[in-house]
Image 1 (cartoon, rainbow, N blue to C red):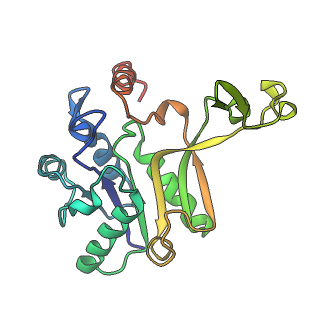
Image 2 (cartoon, one colour; image 1 turned 90 degrees about the horizontal axis):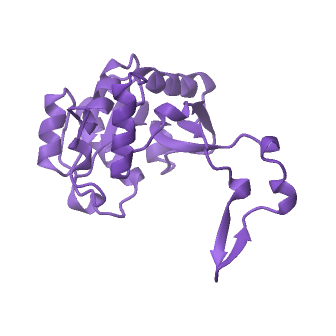
Image 3 (cartoon, one colour; image 1 turned 180 degrees about the horizontal axis):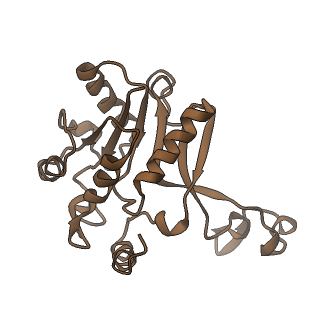
Length: 228
């Protein structure tokens, strides 16, 4: 099987400028994702999709491949991930022929390991599903969530469902670390997930998604304490 890893790394981050190459524990953020991907036993090659030449230079120096720069229309603030991965997949197929699985690896989840990547891919292959994705148990359960409408709480779930917290069912959310998608689902069904998506459960401590500066501080603290 041909299995490729694609790392989407846009240059125009608003919250943290140059986030994808900002130093984290003395290394560019994207280093951790490229490094984990290169250690994967399943991935044939690691590609980076970026519109930023500085990110491109850093990525190639770390061993990733950039067959083409991402076009501006796919690098806007509101550009979803799907067309970015589809674009890169089509470019790659022109160079190496049809692939079987595309694995999306967001650079903002630096504590994800090569084992997390491989276990997600293995889950997809063994289940013969459309896709497999990494998830983590949520810290705040949806049973206790509410909207605020004119200063009034509007519960998402009934009081009967809320009940005792220890009785709540386990609930999981995508953590953004690994999305393994079959090629036909990605390109023909126009989806990262398809109809049959399997879950690979990652621990919360490896599921931190860096969005704000305090996330950098938290992850750096974890790394320095050797918990990665």
